[in-house]
Image 1 (cartoon, rainbow, N blue to C red):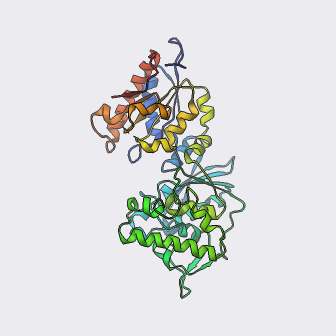
Image 2: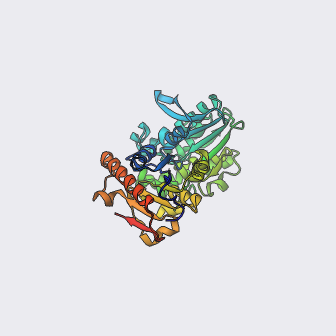
Length: 388
C-alpha cells in the first residue's frame, strides 16, 4: 500500500469517521478503532466527524467547541456548540426537533420546527455571528413555519386568528404578520445539508421524507398541498423569491427548513464539506500516511456526497480505509468512492450489530489491531478489498 512509512517508523493514521447512526457516536467509533491501532504501535490522531446530521454538536465539541445548554419553549432544553473565538455556533436540528426529541412523540402534523428558531435566537444572544444550521435528522415537515414563528412572524387564518406553527396549519394560512420578526442581518446563516430535494413535488420534503416521519396517505397529500399554499401565501406577503427558492435544490431539507433558511438569506453548503473545514480536516490529514473513515452503512447514497466519499476525495493520494457497520456497495465500485479497503462489522461479527453497541465496539477494536498489522506489512495490491 503506497504512502505508508517504512517498517521502523510508526504509521501515522488519521481516524475520521461519521457516527454509526442509532448505535455509536463518531467519537466512540474513532476511540475504539484508535485503541486497537495504538496498542499495536501505530501513531493515531482521532478526528470524529459529522455531515450536518445528528452528531454535529458532539463532533464540534470534540474539535474544541464549547457545549452550551440552552432553554427552549415548554421547559425543554437542548445543546448548541459555540466557538467564541470565531463567534460561530452550531445548531443541530436533530437535537432540537429531531426523531429522538420529545417533538417526535407528537402526531406528525402537530410537530413544529419552532425549537430551531429559538436555538438560533439563543445563539445570537451568546454572541454568535455565524450560525450553522445542521439540517439533518428532522422529525418535522412544517415548511419552516415554526422556525419563522420563533423569530417573530405570525401566521393568521381567514378570521385573523394566529395559527399554531405546525404542519397542520400550512393550508390555513391566509395572512402573514412579519412586524415582530427578529432581524438576522448581523449574523451569517449557514445551511449545512447534503440533501438536494426541492420543497415540493415528487422529490419534495413531504413525498420523499414524509413517510419516515410518520406521514401517510391523506396526510402526505394535505402536507404537500399545504406547503404549496404556504409558498403562494408568503409570495403574496412580500417574500418575492419564495417560489423560486422553493424549487432550489436543498429547499426540502429538514422538512422545509432549508427553504425557510434561504428566505432569510441563508447560504446553503454541503454539510460534509463544511464540517470537514469547520473541524480542521485539512490540518489533521496533512501529517498522516493513511486515513480511516466510516459510517453505519456504506451504500448507494454514499456516492452522493456523504462523508466517507468527501473524506476520501480530500485525503488523496493517501490510502483511505472504510470501517462500517454494513457495506452494500459491490467491491468493484469501491474505487469510485476513492476507498481501498472496507471492513464490515456485520460481516466480521456474523450478524447485524446495529443494536449491540458493546459488540460493535469490541469488533472495532479488533479491526484497529488488524489494521495496525496490515499497515506495518503493506500489500502491494492496489485492488479494492472488502474484508470479512
